Length: 319
Ligand code: COA
Image 1 (cartoon, rainbow, N blue to C red):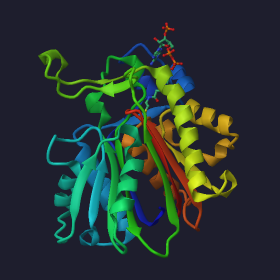
Image 2 (cartoon, helix red, strand yellow; image 1 turned 120 degrees about the vertical axis):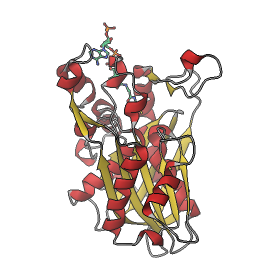
Image 3 (cartoon, helix red, strand yellow; image 1 turned 45 degrees about the vertical axis):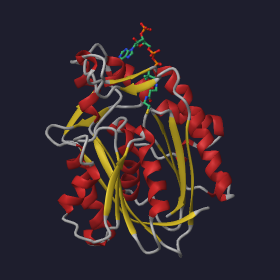
Image 4 (cartoon, rainbow, N blue to C red; image 1 turned 60 degrees about the vertical axis):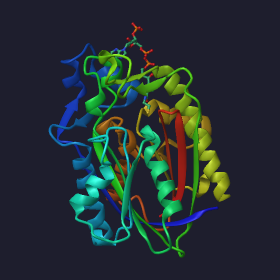
């Protein structure tokens, strides 16, 4: 069953401190050439004193302005994050309070689906929205909190940030197609421990991964998800103007393009500036693509992501 979704506005927030590859080379045994050639990343933004809710709030204010609505018109707020400020309340609830929303219908909650989170959150919004209702869907992360800055195999990859989107359920809009899937991560190829019962040393964990396993998974996952949403919408790649992939690694995107015989120009890529911002990466890319007048005019786009879980998914929308 396809849901009719209209995008009303976009917003983004960058964390305060840019950190270049050269900056990182003063912290760990790495260099710009290694990082850029292996990932396509040149720089990333890292928070100084803003938490996930602060970044999400800033992105939300921009999306609300862009949609030219009042925050009280919102019915649902969903935040996709794996780095919330607190265990409770949710980041979404904190953002609702800061926006001062007093709409009697409003409800807010977070979801955690790692780097695929924004696609999963959008699907949930699509299922929950009643005709005429509006949702604020946010991807926000402060991954710098869970990065081991002494581990060169992970610290070079990630950044902080937030992206937000206002969507409405509109009978006159085109249907959105979704595909979501999680497969068993038996080998623990990508994880960050939470609070452990076992020992004090293991109470909090940093991001850990088996990079090459994640790399292979990502290529297959993104290719499969793109095919699935095209099948559901009953259209072909020729009908798609832009693919907004999760911004993890340029080599992964290039490999998907090659495997599927898609022109690389069809992929929107901004990871050079931001690194992998997990759940924020797709909405940040959408906001940048919108700033560059690449969206609108009834274009069909595919957003496609993958991450811990192992999770992956795609959304095909006409915008
Ligand atoms: N700087 C310099 N050298 C580094 C380094 C760094 N930042 N990180 C690792 N190395 C070294 C390794 O120690 C290894 O050295 P060795 O050959 O002496 O053992 C060498 O570089 C090659 O490491 P390897 O892990 O094989 O590199 P790779 O080509 O697989 O690239 C990743 C590593 C992480 C860039 C790549 O596997 C990747 O992008 N995977 C996907 C990760 C991802 O996207 N995760 C998030 C998913 S949401």
